[in-house]
Length: 216
Image (cartoon, rainbow, N blue to C red; front, side, top):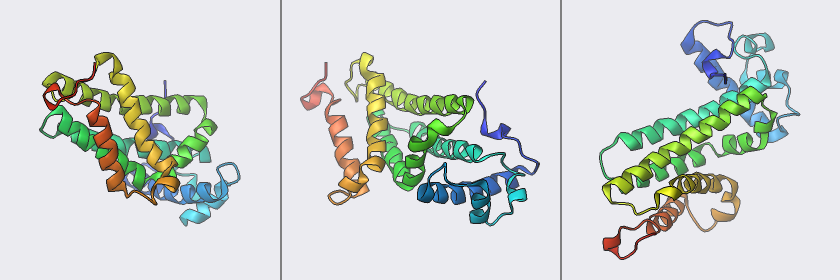
């Protein structure tokens, strides 16, 4: 069974304090991982960066692999929260997709260092934790599948049902592209411009027939 972040052992029982300290550890550790690399960073350096003693830090985590795992969970939980909000709001599937794309891209911007770190270092996670992280990626992708299906059902998106999963993965990758290729893109596009252009390109491929285009 894949680990849940709540089950990473902690000697501290105060749930709010655990969340606060782990968020503090995540921030400090990520700064170090980005500067030095995951493997060259020691747990003692992480503790010092976070303003904690090594003993205190070990009350909240057991290893630096736990930190990497918690970073993965932090990104996924934030994105999941925003996509659920986009799904819950009233409107057509097309409107929901537009909102969800904007939220996805915004999270990729806000957490770009974390996202880069995860894609570089996920291989360092234990197999059980890696399986959990990959499963969370699939769950996030499924939000876009659900929105696309809603648009197909209400007629605001025209898309072959057999390509829904592929389109959902395409949207995920376009958001990640802002993180991975921003060095080449941000001289020509702001995040808002990038979001507007990519959304327009996606929606153009799923234009209802009354707008003069139908994807078969």
